[in-house]
Image 1 (tube, rainbow, N blue to C red):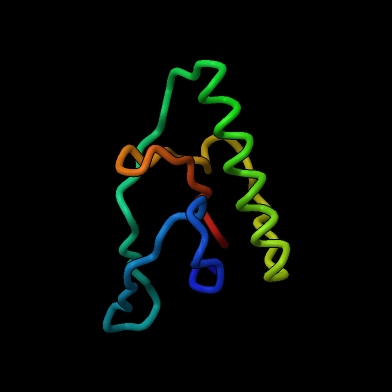
Image 2 (cartoon, helix red, strand yellow):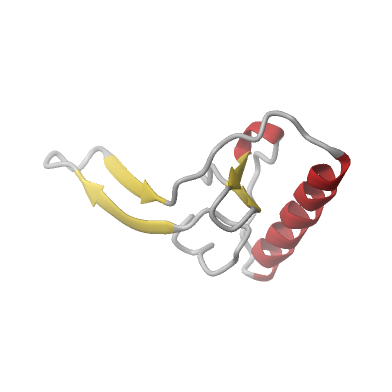
Length: 88
C-alpha cells in the first residue's frame, strides 16, 4: 500500500525496499522522520491540515489507512512537514 500512496508531501517517502533471501521479510528504506513531542497551537493546526490533505489524497487513490493515530504521524525537520506513516 505504501508504494501506491507515494506522491504526496504528507505521506512518508519510500525510497526502496528489499526482500531477504527467504522471501519472508521485507526491509523498507524510508525518509528520516522524528516524533514531535511538544505541540504549540500552530503545530497542531499544521498537523491537522497535513493529515487531512494526506487522507484526501489517499481517498482519491481509493486507499484506506485504517490506523490514523498520533503515533502514526511523524515530523520532517527537513521540510517542516507532518507525515502519515504505517501503511498495512
